Image 1 (cartoon, rainbow, N blue to C red):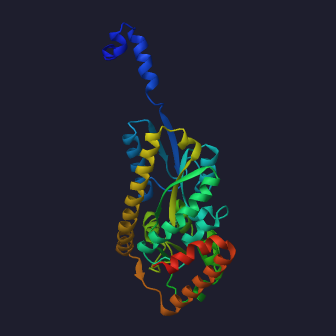
Image 2: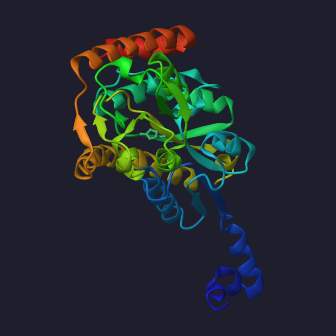
Image 3: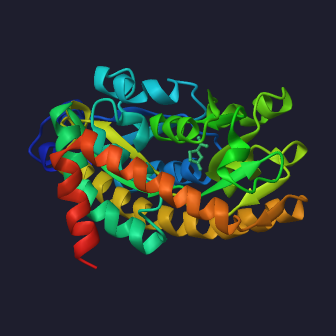
Length: 332
Ligand code: PCA
């Protein structure tokens, strides 16, 4: 009580207990958020999330504590948006392409051969962001930041020379876009969550997949996979978002701290992604996987497939797709 007895209230003769009460009610209430992600604790996206949580806690002087639940432990990847909407979690991270059923424009990330570099991916995000924010707002969610996976390459248990080599094989998929690509190649799509790729390969369930080199490293795919082709097909992004009500319940300064830490997490995450992109390809090579370019024939076939995919996508998404792609292709 000693410290409180130095207050003005004590000086005018009021009791220390009363002074303490007055001070306590002025202190902002503490909030505790649960943040769900479907990826492993050691993956760079999750490490970035944990740092974001630590920075928010420090900047808000402990007013907001965010606990990160990795590896689908609070909700499965596909269920995370619903969990955040319902308040089971206050915040979450998912891969944007898993949102396409509700917001088709989120699939722009996985249209093959549109984004060729991190610089392109940045430009795509700056155009996509306002559209995504609008959809999130209509669901009572706020988009905080997005970070891309490294470019998507082609893994295969055997060398592939042309699209015909995929006929009748099993291709791992992780979103509606990869399912369509498998179909266009005449392969059977096999849906396997990122954290179970190693198990599925070990069980002999897969012949190929399109994913980042990092995903190959995290899943130690070198037991079965012999080939990696750096086709840089697309740069899918993870998005971190929060329940609007939970956000609005925070004091203004804490809300500002969240927005600032989110902007920093976005910048940091993009740099991490770019760094792990290069490291992972080198690691695949060190583990004995043959890192190669696709043959001219396969390359041409994949590009044609990408064009067909784009046409289908533009037709099915309609107006918003044009709102994104027209400036993307014209404002270079
Ligand atoms: N890895 C995630 C999504 C994109 C990627 O590179 C996955 O394989 O599910």
